Image 1 (tube, helix red, strand yellow):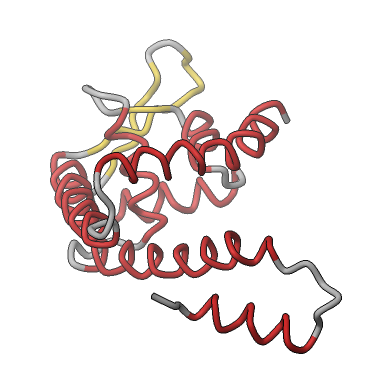
Image 2 (cartoon, rainbow, N blue to C red):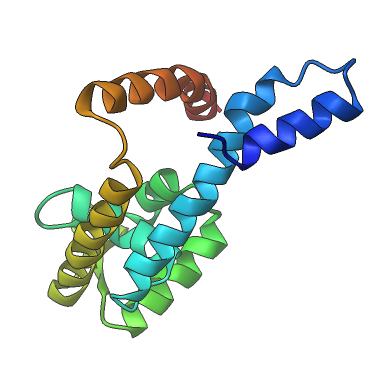
Length: 167
């Protein structure tokens, strides 16, 4: 079964036989898959009236476990945005009733961002919907193939993640 990447590679090999286009075999497919995943995420989140960035913040809070709260600095680390961006995001989520700002009992000057019940319900529903879309995307692979693919992708992605974590 041929895909769009096969056609792209054939065209480059025809037009530029001097180039080794082997990286396209994998990375062009990863890029195309990322577009499909982005579309699935947007659909899943829109069904719950959430933007992707809102899901990112709410899911960071949800993953912490009860009482579902983090400092703005911890949210920065988990979502990889700037301080100003995070402040704006917290303001917007609070205005929608999805998070609350509370004083940090361990730091008189600090605040904690806490997930509201509505925020938890919305992020839980969006996550369930997202997983349904993602299962559909992977439906052509059996468990062993999914595991092998995950292991291979981890080998490619981990050096980037580990480098980012060190800086």
